[in-house]
Every structure is written in C-alpha cells, then in structure tokens.
Length: 296
Image (cartoon, rainbow, N blue to C red; front, side, top):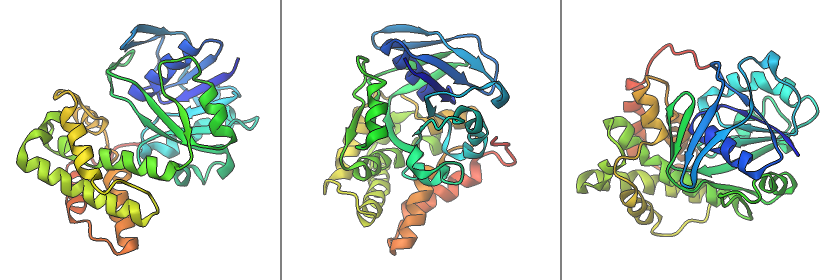
C-alpha cells in the first residue's frame, strides 16, 4: 500500500484519484483549495466515489510515498507550499501538467531526480467542486527510469494505459502539438467543434506546424504530417467537448497560455523559428485574461 497525495483535484486530479482507488490498497490524500467532503467521478465504466482524506492547508498535510501534482502550470508557487510536508521523507513528485517544462517549473523547489514529468491526456471536465466527468481513457506516459516505472506500477489493474516510454521528449511535444490548437476554442469561447470549419481548420494547421517545427529543433521526432494527423483527431472528437483553457475562461480564471503557446514562441525565438500564428494567439489571449488574479 502506498500513501499518495494529489495536489489539485480538478478534472485531471479527480480522474487520477478515481484510478488510484480502483487500483486498491492506496491511502489517498487530496489537497484542495476549498473544503470538500467527497468526490465522485463519472467514468466510462461507471461512477467511482473516491474515499480519501481531504485537506485545504499545507499545515494539515503529512508525509507520503508519492506526490502527484495536477494543478495548473501557472500555479507552481502555490503548489510548492504543499511539498515541504508531503515530501519530508523524500517522496518523488509526478507533475501531471500541460506543456513541456515540467521539471523546469519545479526545479527551484525539488532535486531534479525527484521530479517525474508526466504526459497526461484525458478528456474530462469538472462539472462541480465534487463531481468530474471522464469522457474517455486516461493516457499517462512517463520517462523510462526507476521512479517512472514505480509510478506506472501504482496504476496496475486500472483502466488506463500508464506506461514508460523511451522517447518522452517526442511524446510530450506531440501532445503540445495537440494542445496548441486548443487556443482557438478558448479565444472564441466555443467548444472543440469550432475547428471543423475550413477557415479555422487552416489556422489550426498553422499553429500546429509552428509547434512541430520548434519541437524538432528541440530534438523531438515527429511525423512529417503531424499537423494533419492532429487536426483530424481534433475534428473527430465530440463537437461539444471543452478543453481546460476554455473551461478556465468560462470560470473567469487565468489560463495556461504560456505553457501551451507561449513556450512555442519563446523556444521559437531561441532557435530562430518564426511563430506568427502562436505569437498572435498569445497576444490576443493575454489581452483577454483576467488581470490581478491571485494565482496562489
């Protein structure tokens, strides 16, 4: 049995908690901003009522065997407040966040060898503070290393394809190719079906192609036609599905624009690669998001 803390219990954190409960034998500690007494997750296999200890203050936390971070990429400082107690006996930290800079974000707070980047892909939505809807399989990919293999073992026997991969860099950049075009949905405040039109589909292709060019400069191995493959997959998704950036805009929260599109622009500049579509998306989103929001 492992004691596992999940920091951030939104859509991804909620689904992860449900999976770990289905694995059996784990003691779950859910670290949230607001008081909660329960969590139910509507999975494709049925509703899972998660049994866990809920805490809202870092001072209430205790040492665990694993910490899983499922907060937004912009809220690292707030998340870090939990780590002193949770990691007091050296627990590794799995970072289930968007983007490609998982280790870089937490390097000021943890030894690099204790940070496990996780590529997480799961169609899920938080419908209320205590209820999450999971639309499909959760994919979890981690680097092939000792803590990566231990992480995967925690999900043994559950309906997820958690696995180690030899080329994590390529996997995480391919996911960013998919996420990058999601900015269109968030900008227009419309669900995923918005990219089914010809004009916006072409804009999506431009955004993804820029991402792929930067990814290759960073060393990722991607298909030559990755943009077409990604757009086809997005068009095949349920037209009413809502990505996390759009959900954040609906709720009036900050958005992960830097982790999704800003990083493409920043690393594009580093490699001398033009990223006009992503640069425009970032500028527009930054002009629209709430100002003065307390991220921690």
